[in-house]
Length: 150
Image 1 (cartoon, one colour):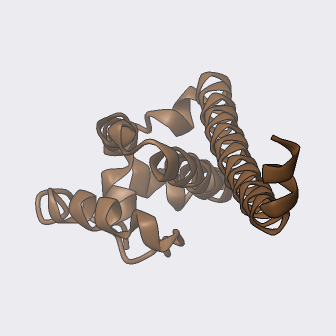
Image 2 (image 1 turned 180 degrees about the vertical axis):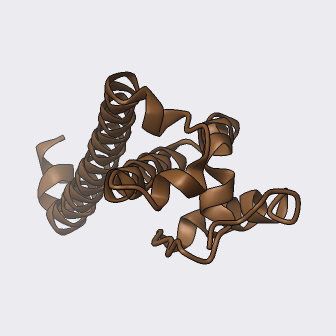
């Protein structure tokens, strides 16, 4: 038996080197998968935190969350607060929809009271490219039916 090992030492060492390399590659892939999963969990938590903060704002400022007249509100002394409220809602939507697109109907409902403001020319909406389809659909689904702020 020892003679066989002595005669095949080079092949055994080569095989061991291949196995070591495969184990190292597998470890690298495993680390990458773990890092990606941790990033996904962190982004989802961040999105939930942003939405939770928006809900707290909505409870604290119900007149901004469900305005009677968005156009009058934007023209009032609370206009900047209202614009910031809608911007925060859009930020929350951007964060959540990036990690979980199934929230689209929730954010469409949240934005509905702000449609006149969203559809008006006084608003400049800034959003991530991933939000473009959602915003485009939202604006296309009723901007011609609501009065716009001027």
